[in-house]
Length: 332
View (cartoon, rainbow, N blue to C red):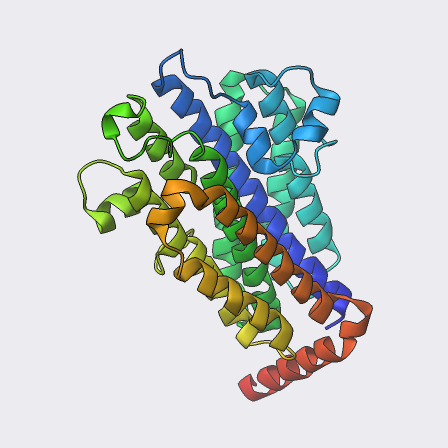
């Protein structure tokens, strides 16, 4: 397998996951604002912060209102992290790797991109926004199902999973950082919390499709900040918890050759998350911890890039190709 092909597969998966997570975030924010008092100080600008696009947004828009933010995050082609841009990038990456990806997966992704593009072209209004977001979420989930049901468990499949779960860990950390910023103040005295804090913590969970699973596993009355953080950072069974995502990335790396450098950086990051004292994070250190986590995720990504996608990575990818050919021969 060429390093260029491996890179395209990895980033295709990251872009599809990014599109889905962004759609979920917009959807949940809409319902959160409907459920919260009008006097609440947060709004749509928090989504720009979560996506890390504040500078780009204000270079093109004057006000972070609902219309501007949703347009920027859903269909603005100047924003390379928008849903439409992410799907376009995923489609282009997959177009150049069609010989190693199931045909059904390519057809589905191509159709999903065209559906979203047509709906965005007709205008992003409150009325059709939900339909666009639903299309993205269900389409992304179907893509994962198609690849899971029709792909050999070879290097291609593991590169896709590695990209998906590293992107998912990144998004979970961003949501926790921004969403919990105003919820950890005066947490020791529940009466000092805003009356809608319970709703906001629910929105943190729902942003990650974690609310139902959280209630089933934590089994405590109410939704408490410390429990939410512990669940979304350290649970090893929920598929959007950081610990679970990192463990899946490790599994993928274990199946690839020349994995020493990315595995070492990943192991350090896993220890950092598993050994974190959530009570202390709630008290004062969450933002710093998330910053360090983001740096660690970037380092893992850099080491994956250096090992498998750079010019010097050709020997590693040649080994991958050799292993894949042997698997096919053994199957035959």
